[in-house]
Amino acid sequence: MITLYHCQDARSLRCLWALEELQLPYELKAMAFPPRVHAPELLSLHPTGTVPLLLDGEQILFESAACLEYLACRDRSRGLAVASDDPHFGAWLNWLHFGEASLTTPLATMMRYAHFEPEPRRQPAVVADHRTIFLDRLQLVERALQDREYLVADRFTVADISVGYAFVLARMLKLLGDLSPALQAYWGRLQQRPAYLAARAAQKVAMASLVPAA
Image 1: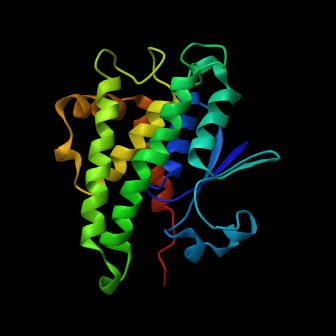
Image 2: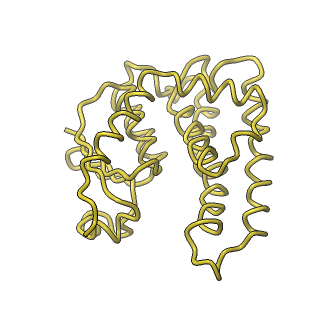
């Protein structure tokens, strides 16, 4: 059985969502954030102590986009992967990695310098710059959705999960009001998917089971 180490609304939510889309059995191990502090045993499995950490037999994956690709290719019957001989394969790979490298990265920088760093180390100018970067890059997503409901191959794939997770962080940073109507509609479609709702429900149950720190 697949085991997923997960923190509330962390990048591992991508993996949890994909597991629900694929209807694969899994064990969810919830941890408080940051896991390297609150669950030091994780360091024996993954030296950086971050999530996601996905275990499937002998396979160990810890990059969320890699986890998405692995899971989608593990069970191709659900159509979440695009075959290498498909004309859409290159676009699928681009969007799969765009969600993390180009969208989530500026948001993570914003969160660090707006919330996680001690007050003397917070950087409003850095936050403002990366907000602009994120919103500029969203224009590429909007253009890709001009004549379709999902990003690539005329269907929902893990590329949509990768990009969609950026909206989870955008909500935490109060950026959803900056989205165009088309992007708000896209995010609305993603949130209505039964697997996304199931992932949110599984997360809620798992996080509620954590023992509060003394």
